[in-house]
Amino acid sequence: MPTASTAHEQVATVAFSGSGGVWGAAWAGSAAVLAAAGELVRLAVATTGGEDGWRLQGEGVALHIDPASEAGGAGALRAQRCRVSGESRRPGWPSRFEATGLRAWRTLPDPGEARSLRNVLAWFDDGAAVALDAARPARARGHDRDLVNVVLLESAGPVAVEEGRLSLTFRGGRAPVGSPPEPAAGGLSEASDERLPQPQGSASLPGAPARVGLELWLADEEEHYPRRLAAEVQDSPGVVALDGLELWLGRLAAHHAGQDGAGALIVAGRR
Image (cartoon, rainbow, N blue to C red; front, side, top):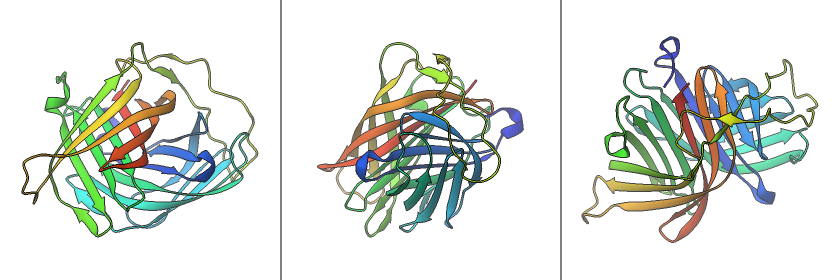
């Protein structure tokens, strides 16, 4: 996880989707990046955390993120349904768009306690949403030792989860990694069509994530079986090197209780 200088850093994540294929996911800590429209954009302004409105801004793109539900919490993790209003001057992006999604915020674990953090955000049209963080201890090799926090939201409000588990399936080969351009100072400016440098191999992932599985045991559930969520990775711009971390951000097609939804997987590891 983060270097010693960024231990206990506050970090926020958000993912959203809308009509016309609009989708995006962002990580915002001491530095911030947005994945959308097949590219990575470094964010110069990131006002996040807490239940008020958030604002993200980078070269040629600005997002306003407002709460759309009651927030729920589990351990260091809190999450909330949200509405996203965006405007863009980037090639291939809509000039204005509206979207719905899920946002979460937490304190990063100490670098001596975890070597990676895996964050899943998923939401559905009936109001249900799931945010899960799995911190991988430094010497652990499998998900059975992950330290997991889960927030489950339903239309009536948050639902207590007693235990959550995350499993990931990877494709062969290293996930690609690149570095986004430095953000331009000032307001929403015209953006060039310049793309990221040719990606290199990532050391923090065994391959490109392909599938996600969640198992959630509810605190007051009488039956002794978990609720399950499955998701497939649809696309990703790859891994980005950001402020001592390697971040992988990918778009999910999620399935839960007979419903299809949207989501994102964000993986953070020490460089």
